Image 1 (cartoon, rainbow, N blue to C red):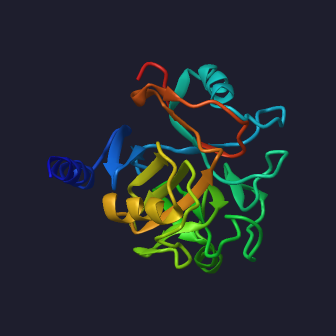
Image 2: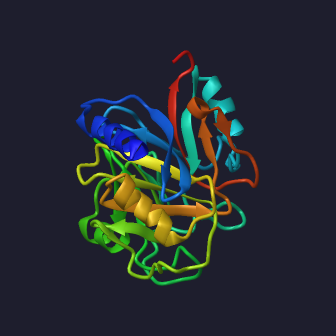
Image 3: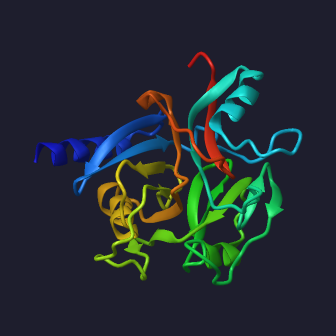
Length: 248
């Protein structure tokens, strides 16, 4: 009960605050520990990173840190942000600095990405929204940056229709959820292997977010200095991060 009250207080505080600094923490839900980082995209500028100035994939958080250090910045938070081919090219839509670098994919395809409905994270100058792919195609919002992935975890408050409560497929998983208004973006990664159903319920039931998108499993990585954490491992494709002043 104490843990539930603490979680409720944390979420209430998140909802009430008109402007929030980056906050990373750990939350237990249904016996599974998750690390989360919340960003206020109305006041904090999330960025997507794929290739360096020479066209080489960054691959690791440290390579982005090296670039940002030259600008007097550092990563306040970062996470892998979407599936990619063996050469690190994004599988679906990828927009960086207003430039479309990979096209939108709308057909059912291989693996988790093709488990429709899938979706994308759209970053604008006024917020961040997780949007189902066909909705994005209809509405064509002006994203200064976007990354497509799949499957959707939560769609308008409902779990993806193909998730099974009794699934035995468990992985370390990561993803992102947003509010309808686009004023809160919460990035989460499980500490323990979880099913899609468990992961989606975390976004819907514990974080109370109506839209959530899966980023990946197996390759899931988090950089969160507030938690003393910067995961290493396989080279990544698209990465989302929050550049902050190095002395913050």
